[in-house]
Image (cartoon, rainbow over all chains, first blue to last red; front, side, top):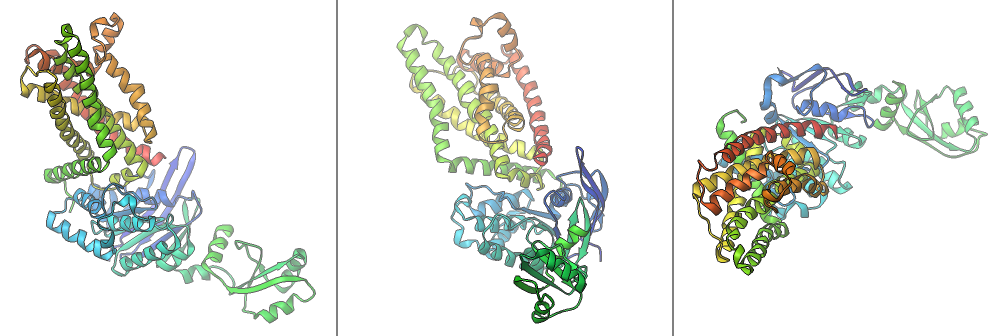
Length: 303
Length: 261
């Protein structure tokens, strides 16, 4: 079966800044792939190029097995785009927004009406059908925004930080909706800064740095890239002593997001760790499994 | 679903036009000012002219001037600049650019919406003008043609100004004041061309608003025909063509600007 998206050797420069540098990524049909990376690493640039909003300096993109350029304007009916900024018409009602965007795709009136009803059902928008979009909460606006991006039944849905601007409860609602789209077979390429979002929604995650993919895989595959089974986190005023003891014990210093963290090559229970630190004053010790966050920081810092 | 057939273009034009009119209708405060401004202008001019019997002949020309220089200028040119700025500010423009919407459909959709608004303004303004004594003397078809090419030209200029000078709504007034109002003055909206210095008169010949004013005043106030206004009409048609090209290319330029932000 052909891939939904094949991106290879993509490069893009803005002035003196090389934003994408030999970026490559394949996305299977029905797969959700997340792009993770620090600000400015080129995530949105990839999406803009895929959506034909930007031209790459070099590289190749195949959409559903054919070069993106060959699709021409038709690529825009295969792709759906939903960004973090709610790009809707505030003076119009939800159905009117859906109707406007559906008309741009040339949908016949009966098909359009049926599709709008379907989306109003699927996204639970009927209770707000008579409310102008500008008067909806941020969460409902983003829910409608996602519905609008699905109006043309896209084969590939591009989500650019879709939950960045909403509160925690709306975020969970949106995750459920995205999960339903995923379960319905929609291919999704999404960018996010939230590791929990990537962990929950994505089949595979591509970690980006300096305009290229530095690691790609499922969550267990990325966790396996961290050479250890658990992380011990220690708080102590005697930092040098802790460091020296950890080195003697063969614990690897872990470049986690905070404090004194060490990777354990084999699992130890809390009592064994405390015993190993005998003679050093510690205020807290905790042991946890390696998380995606740990793996992410490890990948970024050791690459 | 998406193809290049003319029916898609037409559907997109109608969709854009319908959406703009719906937005305009929902913005009740803006709608009131949009309606009140030319009516007030007409009433004020009417009061001035009716007060002075020797100047009553100028009332017919004033009605034509207010339609071209006040009503259509602010609604078609100002409205277009404001709509572009609003699309950019709200982020809807980026969504449009990622949709199959054709640049020509976006431009023509805006023209169609502005034409419908212009029609309402023409009827409204001339109803008031008739009530205070002004009369329309020439061919209705020729007058309608001049309004049509003027609306195209105003929307084209509005696209250009909106793209180049108004990325936020607060910049709309600045763009209109700095560029639009001097064009209005040079176009003879406030003072007759004859009282301007010769240098200004020469420069004014390149101002499309002068030719819009002169052509419409010629038809509406003095009953002139195509032969009498041939130069103005040719100028307006050529300028209209340039404005359409400028408008559509400005839309494409928007894409570049949006992604640079």
